[in-house]
Length: 237
Image (cartoon, rainbow, N blue to C red; front, side, top):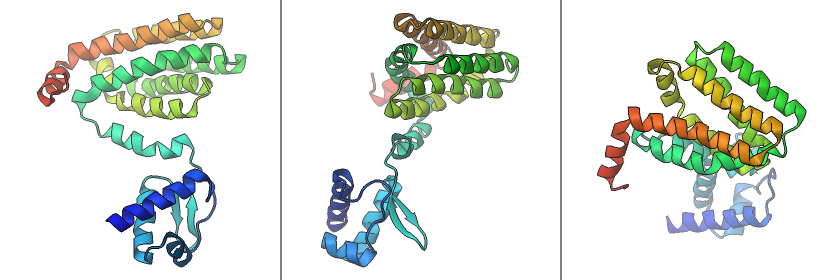
């Protein structure tokens, strides 16, 4: 594995330094192996590892290309990892959202155009219309937050929060089923966020987003008490 690790490190450095730019095609396998100073088999294994990490795209019959290296591509692995987290890590996930999402919402308050704000209003209307269909409503909920974070202008943050938000989808659906009036409260919280954004007030937008996440966190602590016990058993806290 040492040879493979070395080949991976060399390829990563080539990509990082721009020796093989984003979107470009790698040299043929034999040429690349000679360049790296390893065998073709070792080169092939290194390429497989970097393809799994989404740095390379192997196109059958065409060659191997460097991906776009965009955050949404490179962080696909992060999204997969978050999806595999067990329920007792939900509090960790929402804790990270609490640290990041209000700040992103505050940043969006000074950047959102009238058209973007109107699009958010449309998503709010669709949330209200689908209030009795939790799974549909939550799709609009996710789209609402995704649009806000995207407007903050940080592609890396957008990809991270998108992955974190999707991980709590099942808990949100369950909340809608067992908690009376949760849909109306959720919509009201989103309306408060939208109103703050419409005013262009970062502090108010931050507070509205934080209150929304805190409400979800309080519900999780009440209805997922096993999450805390499981974390303590693992030595988390």
